[in-house]
Image 1 (cartoon, rainbow, N blue to C red):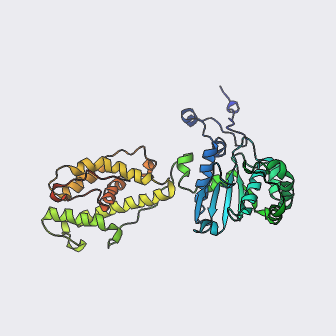
Image 2 (cartoon, one colour):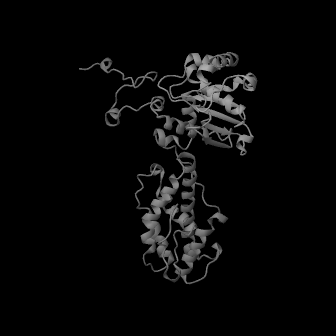
Image 3 (spheres, one colour):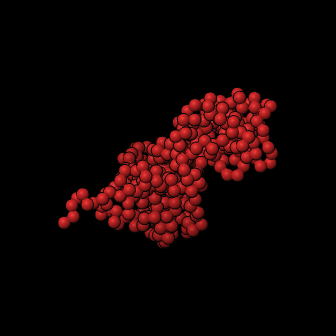
Length: 374
């Protein structure tokens, strides 16, 4: 018999609590904690992760831009406080991807760049300048960043060896004359750091988090029922319903009040489906990367277009056959798959009809065979 104490905990990575093996671990492996996963990011992935995080700071920034790469002049991820960009305040998030926590020697040239290029008028000095590193910032550097006067003193002492010939390869930049005056007036309290845990915690609130780290999507909010009066943004698919009902009944319908009582329930049902899909669109906007919902719409379109283009007795029969087909489409590869309901797929047909990418009443025998879903 094996005693409980014989079950030894497993260390996933340093600094993370140990876990005990379970049946789930046998099938899926031990989940890698987010700080450990972040530590394995390439420099490109680390910049992308930081950019995703900064984009979520909508209360702080009007725009976020990424400038990393050769010739970036010492700026990586920039948050602008106004749409005028450099004309307003801005913060810089300097991404440093090293195998060890940052130390003072890793930052002198970055400080030199921000001082030199702001002196040259390439941009105004930032409000804040944060170092962000997947392995974090070492104790020595943390203390130094908390003491602006000492940071300034050491930056001046290290300039010749770390900045003078390393800020740019085209010219040597001694710290003297007007540049020295600019250096002495520069506010060294802007330099600080953001911890990995701070970034991960805020990143969890972005639409990129589930795709990057897994763990599933949050629950969808309850779908708001359609209002009694349809809105202007519904006019396309509503008009198409009128066309389908008109052809089916052999009458002209141009208003909801003119719909025969036998079709009132159908009209309400189609509008509920449209609102379901609109709710999913809004949910996707906040929880998954841009383009995910458009990709879902494209899948639905290609899954129903042949049915829509088939011969049908009238527009209502075409609409019903198309909507029925949409419920049978497999969308398992889309990031939204776990939260998509039948009503969403059906409602997407009406979203496509709203933009006349699906048409229920074909004029003069025309069919939709040249539509591109962006």
